[in-house]
Image (cartoon, rainbow, N blue to C red; front, side):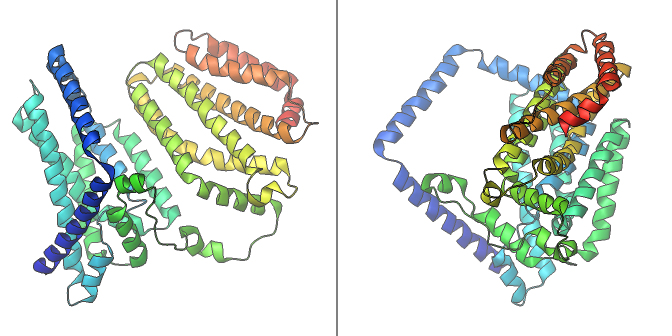
Length: 461
């Protein structure tokens, strides 16, 4: 079995090397190589002549050392979450069609799977050991034992997450979303535990699950989906795709939605169901853009949560503006796409159903707010959260109402909606240095709700 799999790996690497070699022959010539060498030499010489690069590296390593030492428990909880997010698209163990053919031949399926998993663990060991060695050579403060502790922690989590990723990939989308939300809640809860207890809890949970799931490794496995995702992972060579302008695509299969039982039920011919289905089709086609925007906003907020409170609140205001603008642009674009462009539709119903879809991804923004709350939790933080939610709701309603105004010329938006919505956006940033803005905001909300309640429903419907 080992010889057969070695033969398979050798031929796979030979094929990839042949493709890359052919790409280099087509892409590079003597002139490009000469200019590249000159440019690289100039950059290296400039760095050496400046003389301060090593001091800067030392400063960065010292700061990273302090960060890792203080937040090891956060790393322990975040790493499994990252592995789960990755398991939405790939099964963790790259079990391609070639490995599947080996299981049809007289080779035990569990043994083939174990060999592929060991290949993953070996790659993780080499990768983390390499970067650990670099940190050891560059760091003026980190000891070998200290770096080895982190290296083995990363390797251990990688090994313990192999089976959870494999099983998670097989689940229905709703179960995946429920588990992801549960892991988010677990991460939030562990923030309030001591670091040692957090580490013990995470490792105990992972070890227990691995012992339980190892006997059910191949139950309810969609091998067609597994091999398709693995083949895509193996042969989607981005450099080749960029150079040839040809994208490697997965085999055409039924989407996860079409395999769910409720999707096969008779379609309810009512307006709400029809518009929800249209939004589902549209979002599924543009899910890459939506995920990129949401992911970038979450990373930005996570980074700013470690800077200071005012900068974080500025990032929150920017996030609200960007996300609501994205939703409004989707609503506008939907009326210029496929069948919606040529048939009459109920704009209000389209707007309301989109708002329902737009509120679902906001749950994931709990993560950066929870991280921020660890160091800045107070009564004012609770007031800020209320102000943020109100501002988000008002801006979402305002921007979608403006899109409606583009298609319904008789529709009018009250002037005070712009002032209040963007005024609240500014108040979010000012709420830390000037806490009295909460009083202003809540007084304004009280006045509006008292005098303009009926008008609000008219203008925002």
